Length: 192
Image (tube, rainbow, N blue to C red):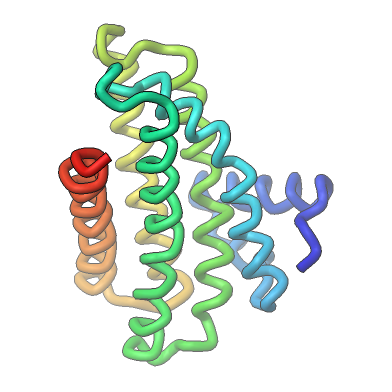
């Protein structure tokens, strides 16, 4: 696999930003080849050091879980969250009657998620969300909410789902993500 080059990364990030700003026509610029698929995951792996730095700064477990143990728990959680939804959508794309759209969906979703991730990383690295202003927490929650909305728009646009099906899928993704977070907190971190 050829890693994503800087010029291509900038172009895909721009397209992801356009989708994040509700310009759904940008979804047509994402590829649907095996190479596009792998490059979208490659980029999410490249950004992980910044994600980890932000999570480590936010580390509410304190000294109970020093660096290496925290790294193992957060990295495992990140990798699971990176692949669970594409795997679920592989099956659901068949049920929705549009399996040919699955790769484009995964590629687009991976690139689009980088915009809110970047904003959240900046917030986590620069603002103390625990003791800081309520405005920072509200902004953080608004970005998460907007990400859910955009995720639903991407589903609707690419799979032509009805509003109830879209809501069910978005809420299902959110619920699974929360459960995985609880598993990390109460099982993985407790066993380290």
